Amino acid sequence: MTGKFTKEEVIGVVFSKLRPSPNDVFADIGCGSGAVTEFFAPYVRKAYAIDIEISDEARERLKRFDNVVLLEMDGKEFLKKYSPDVVFIGGTKGVEEMLEICNARRVVVNAARIEVALSAARKMREKGIFREIVLVNAAKSYELAGGLAFRSLNPVFVVFGER
Image (cartoon, rainbow, N blue to C red):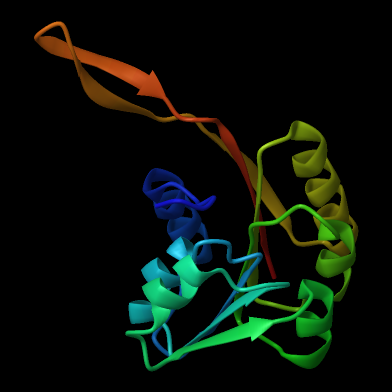
């Protein structure tokens, strides 16, 4: 992978919070490399991968799915036009505005910075949907001097809201 992407360990936590059902419409706002959409697509009726500019990596990764729609548009504009059941917001620009208009049953905002996580939690509280923030810290093993050591991944705040 060459672009920015949500690590599979974090996607597992996101999936456990969003708990999609087979009839759900899923939206990945700020889809980046398409890794989150790729994970969710087999479990939902329809998946939208939304970004201002869809990367070549995302296009390649998602072309095998018949139920995935790639949309080059702003997340706020998407949420004004569409009504997904479960939403993942992976970018940080405009998070509060998106949460203000988002009416999904469940929503997760991933944030690398605590300020963004707190801002998302504050907006979710205002809307009465805030449930929790989960801080995901993971490390992966690698070979070192004939043994194994661990390299930490960047921690991620998973901010979860539910109606």
